[in-house]
Image (cartoon, rainbow, N blue to C red; front, top):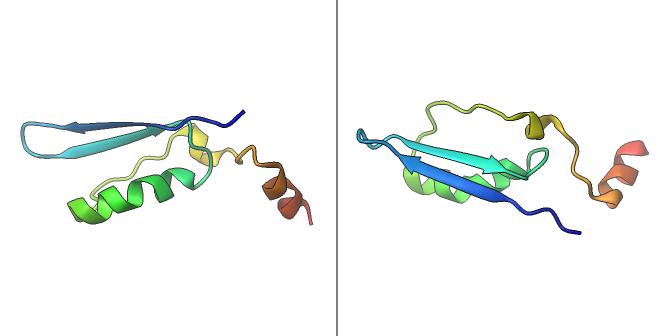
Length: 67
């Protein structure tokens, strides 16, 4: 079963954009948000969720990490 990623993008009254990614483990969230960040400009603050520190469930990556 493939994991599903969800993005929640909010823009406040001052134009501040917040992107929250759920369901993406490890650095995959950065790959997902990079095109959006590039289009919007400078990233002021980046907060990592606990999912960022988890390893992806891809078995081939697990084997690579165990070498």
